[in-house]
Image (cartoon, rainbow, N blue to C red; front, side):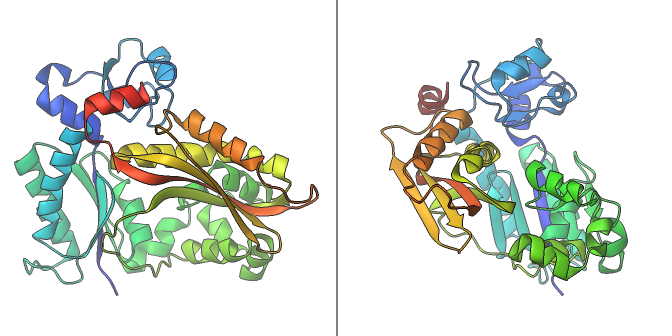
Length: 353
């Protein structure tokens, strides 16, 4: 049995800005450039009370909170703090899987400080982050990555939550299925159509029925409903692309696939911004009902400037699929490729503003 800790910095980019500029403390801070093509990179908790969230168009954020303070992102500074936090992790374990600049999984089944429990490790890390960076982090502790990530969000901000193995099933049962990783709004609506709104209701559906309707993803849903996640913490490897994909509940035409691409474009755009990287190309992935995989890609002179631009390129790539009109597709994915570091605020402003 593994001991997994998920650490998630609280409103990371916005918190760094508030730490470094005392005049911003207690105010609704939005990390974004103003403009029609800009999206929110991060929002302070004061801004979130107005409904502002990451990946939201900056114009909408401004409408929700006219008094918000807009601060242009400084990814070089955020990366420097992220390195500080990583150094703290490394005092406790070598098994670190970063998800972005502000969150990571840690396998502390054995820890370098010989602390008595994973909870003690999480407490020590949070204390060291506060003392050395002046920032707060939330932590989740559980026997696997899936549960640890849910736990870290449970008492945000500046919280710690533990899901013990014997508590996992009872904890999961009342949760909405949207809390499960990979269950976005589209899949949530498909499950709702089957009368499934909670994890407990998902668990009650026979595995055979989920398999027949959703294939391999149905089996994965069943595992998650049981609190099962066998994926180990994977030590960081250079990522070749940032991508997101979705398996449809029913096979779709190429035209219908186009309507499913917007949330995928938004997800990868947010992931790219959180990681401090840009993509100089976009790739579209499709899988037909007979499991034939097609990819279409485009290399760009400059990285896309918004999630909407990523979506527009993916739509254009869809038109390059030359299969019969009656072909049906079971999966679509969108990715950013040819990744480059977003190393300076000046460069970011020219690309994203």
